[in-house]
Amino acid sequence: MKIKTLIVEDSRLAQNELLTLCEPYSSLTVVGKAKTLAEAKTLIIKQQPDLLLLDINLPDGTGFDLLDQLQWVPQVIFTTAYDEFAIQAFERNALDYLLKPISEQRFNQAIEKLTAQSTATTPTGLIDHKIFVKDNDRCWLIDIQQVRYFQSQGNHCQIHFGEHKPMVYRPLTQVEQRLPPKQFFRVNRSYIININCVKHIEAYGHTGLVLTMDDGEDIDVSRRHTSHLKQALSL
Image (tube, rainbow, N blue to C red; front, side, top):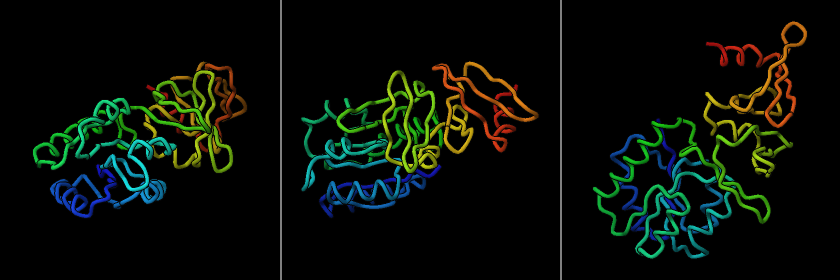
């Protein structure tokens, strides 16, 4: 499995040191380097990395500021010269917190954690089964198990969980790429559903299916996806 990695670090020397530490790992593919929060945000939207090697102090803000501005947060390994932000980092679900100068042994331990978690979850880029969503001034750290379905809204989509329906500012196709494929299923052009949240399935016509979700929403399965859904649900 290839882990798309973005280095966010304002020091060229530190960037090169991180590149050197990444080189022995064929699983790590460095897709870009950023020196500022603004550069990092642009590259994250473009490259959709699985992992950020993230410095805390950047010229135009902090690594925490960057995470607050993202709709979908990759896995994060913080790299910093300061130990006072460690608690704050782990409150943000950081995989690890590496103090500079970073030793090869310490970096290896962090990557072993990443590899173990990636193997235990899915190859889609979703790690720890959590997604961070920011909609206007409201933020959520959502356990993916709680999501009933994703609903397309043009170039964006809504996440339906509990009583909430925050908007994610990316198309449904991009969201689909990051979901566990055995749990989430694309049933038509507008919906990706959590199979565990299907309450009832009703057939209609020769090949049609209607799913009733546990919130009472009825969702049609397109003809194209019906056979795949039956296969996914069969023993």
